Amino acid sequence: MFQIRVHGRGGQGVVTAAEMLSVAAFEEGRHAQAFPSFGSERTGAPVVAFCRISDKEIRLREPIMEPDAIIIQDPTLLHQIDVFAGLKPDGYVLLNSHHSLEALGLAELVQGRRAERFCTLPASELGLKHVGRPIPNVPLLAGFAALSGIIRLESVILAINERFTGKIAAGNIAAATEAYERVQQQMKEQAHAKAD
Amino acid sequence: MLKQTEGSKAVAEAIALCRPEVICAYPISPQTHIVEALGESVKSGELTPCEFINVESEFAAMSVAIGASAAGARAYTATASQGLLFMAEAVYNASGLGLPIVMTVANRAIGAPINIWNDHSDSLSQRESGWMQLFAETNQEAVDLHIQAFRLAEELSMPIMVCMDGFILTHAFERVDIPSQAQVDAYLPPFEPRQVLDPAEPVSIGAMVGPEAFMEVRYLAHAKQMQAIERIPQLASEFREIFGRDSGGLIRTYCTEDADTIIIAMGSVLGTIKDTVDEMRAEGHKIGVLGIISYRPFPLEQVKAALINCRRFVVLEKSLAVGMGGIVATDVRMAVTGTGLKGFTAIAGLGGRPITKASLHKLFREAEAETLPPVTFLDLDWDAVNKQLAREKQTRRSGPVAENILHDKGIVSAKFG
Image (cartoon, rainbow over all chains, first blue to last red; front, side, top):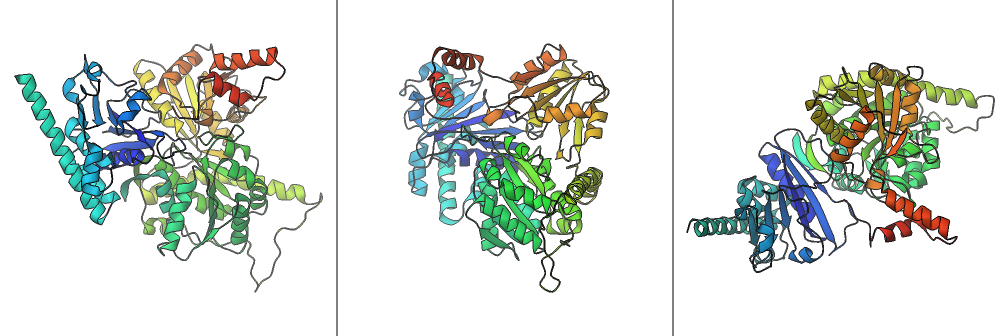
């Protein structure tokens, strides 16, 4: 079972992200379970949502305390809560920022871990560019697909089409596609840097 | 059709397939998404003929359901927590009058302290109301139980609550097979009321009944629930024939055949318990699970039969009888009277506290060793409790308990996990 925790703030589509991720996994014939952190959501307040993906029926109902992957929709949360709590040693991290992890002072976090599984993506900018709103959730899902290979971009696009229609769907697909390519590009550059 | 959807939306679709004629509800978390979705499908004309009645309170919601049902309409409502308490008088009236209303309870704790998260205190507070209560383990089962509930309720002319864990199920996206209209129509015939307010054949419903007849009316309500003990497994097996899956029934056992220790629970926590039991089985522990689906009527004989060959059992329940201990545990102990079985009660998950595999592993091992006290409070923060007790000993004006505990724990506002 692969477990993902999504952190963000009320209004950023954190719960939607986890739900869409579960839909994408379902489209690939897998079992998936998404659920929110059940708080009284308010705009701006820290929000957590969870998604489990498995090839078998998922019966477990506890919150995800040891995630395989963490998606952080708002970098300002890093100063407020321990978003990395419980992350597995070989886990993935995708952070919404136009800065690198080093520039954010997070180089230490990567130490002793698999650096190629850490990535930043300017997801709010991509949302603004393609959808007209700085909502980072869909670009991050596509970026996560590229980073982890756990789901395919095509499945994220299916999930987008299930949730949105018309211009908003088209914009989100464009944002997702660019996000996917950007993360792939970053991974290639990282791999080359390592090879050098 | 198999789809990945939210529990609330799946239940709303199932209700719509049951062709309700009147839906009346007042929104309360975590029930809201169910009635919102139903409101939308009535407004869009997708669900027709059906009247969605906006009411000013839960008391009104149940009162409208009573009126609708008495007029011969298939009536549905949904609520949770304080909403269920607010409608309590009408809840008793619905069953007392023998009106087959189906109501979803999106299980949530009862305040004070106010808490929107899941436990079973709300439904269980109405356990003697005369309503049947069925508990869903998954969203698939929530869907299926609603379809079975209309059939059973109308057959017996008694109301049913379908209980599903608030947030944990209502807000969870998982795969659900939504039946076809043809399947539901084949299973659920049109509502033929036993009593109906019809101007062509006038009757009165709701007579005042004195000591000369009250006990008989009450006994008949009990007799109907005893009939339900027979009918629930039959309806589950008919359901399997049409829909092709096992859902409902009175109880469900898992790995109990050779189990020395059996864990008993209701609702979605059964999934986490089964995962824990699988891990313990892999290590050689002889442990199994008994899920109770029908809490009212309570299947005393079936529970006894499921437990008779074990050595000990633990009732893990999301409810607390303050001043006594377990609520479900009391019924289970009644079922095993005279067997000499050793029983433990574990109060867990109150107000949405997560029930984790790690905590269950520890609890179940202590149960096996029989080192548990008769009543345990899973993951209770004893430091916080003792600090408050000491404060009360020290100072007369020790202040409000909830605020003190929050302050001691350094919590500014409520959060999950």
